[in-house]
Amino acid sequence: MITALLATASIAQAQQSSLAPSPCDKQLIGYGQKDKPKQWTYTRAAANGGSVYYFGAEHSQQTTHQQFALIKQAFESAKPTVVFYEGPNRGIDSTAAATISKYGESGYVRFLAKQHNLPVESLDNPVAEYQYLKSKIDLERLKLFYMLREAQRLRTRTGSTQEQITKAMEALLVKSAQMLPGSDQVIRSVAELEAAYKKHWNDGTNWWEAPSAWFDPADTSANTGGKFTNEVNRASSEFRNLYMYRTLAAKAQAGQRVFAVVGRDHVPAQAPALDCALTAK
Image (cartoon, rainbow, N blue to C red; front, side):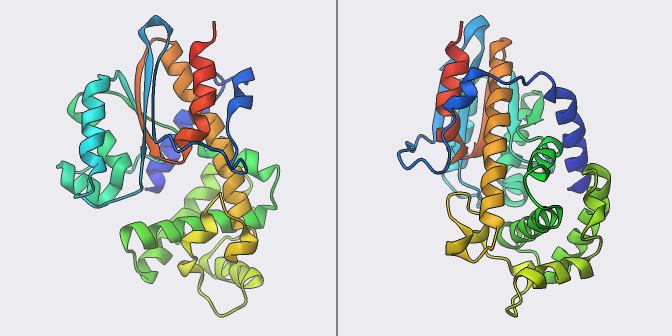
């Protein structure tokens, strides 16, 4: 997983220079706007034969979830030339069911792309996101946020045990020092991770059991008990929305038929900006 994240970061860094600021950036819908429509899919044609089919998915590794049939149907309808997934490339398995059970919707769309010999790219740029957040957030809190969010993901989505999460954090600490410049200045071991956690949550709870609610960008830490995690996740999500929509728009404007699967809340946040970019003269 960590190696894949590093590879994703390197590719994203190479692509970043082409994602210039645009007047359409202002069309993104922020998490504080209460009137955001619940538009879970988005389709629009662009000039030069390009198009975007954006599928908003629930994060699920249940093979019986009805969305996977819908993703396949949408994929076949879109006839894409390039496929985008959310997060790092964690790979695929030998069958659709095994891929879904291990890697969820992001793995499944990579599986479909592999079947059709299509290129895949990530919708995320972890290095650029880190640099953006580091300019706004204390480094220790930022790194603690990243570690707790990944521990929560492993616990809730893969059912990892405390021992498995701890081993994953040890690997992440090593690799993050290579990927995220300056991050090795704080929280350099699991012991330091635990100490940093207790500094903020000295209530007898465990760092590997951080609640999912702490990472909801639409909520506040005052409501969830996350101290600062909800606000960091909101800043992260807002940066990611910006990067995602620019990436998809650039591909479609270049004549590519884009198919992308993402956590569904991102779609209505980005839809107005995509409309703006894809209809611009």
